[in-house]
Length: 275
Image 1 (cartoon, helix red, strand yellow):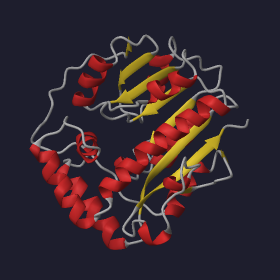
Image 2 (spheres, rainbow, N blue to C red; image 1 turned 180 degrees about the vertical axis):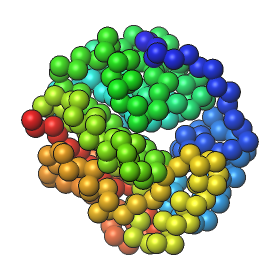
Image 3 (tube, helix red, strand yellow; image 1 turned 90 degrees about the vertical axis):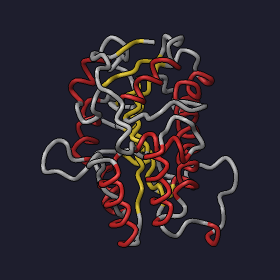
């Protein structure tokens, strides 16, 4: 495994919840603390389908990486906000299809970095970067000797953009997507999805809860039309277009409407860089 530019110097803060550790708990993991589990309990009161959505999102990640590797020939992946390692990480899925596939994981959560570096230590085609995913220039520099930026790359923003607030500068989620798209060559792909809701009470309640629980390390739950803007610089893969990710080329028939969440969904799709 290759390492990023910065060494880990920050301590793990167990006094506030972490979105990455909460996600780990929702997926049935053990790399979390009481503060994360308490926050998840409160979150489930507002949005009861949250645990189901976490699993649906993880299934989508595995599926889309496999399809990009198998059908689009992608063998380089840049995973923004990668979270805690679980079974079937991006490199495991990609390397089953393309054994030499390279994956750079980007995160700045100290616990994520510690566990990623331990679990990925024996894989020379993985890289772990200690960076804020909004620092696109630093990420480009750090990966220059690992990824070949003259060839197609799949940039992943899977269930992470809701962790970023809206701003009037280059840190805005839509601006971040454009900045990454501008660095990619034609034939590259971007995978983008985030939590959305048509229910204003869910949007406001979850946004406030997560902001409080994570000490402000959160953005907001958005609406589908807002996420659609992220795809403005891209040619959307259609079919299936932009959808609830459970409907993005499923391996088995998705659930009928009456069995689906009504509080919120993970929504997005895949866009291609065409020129």
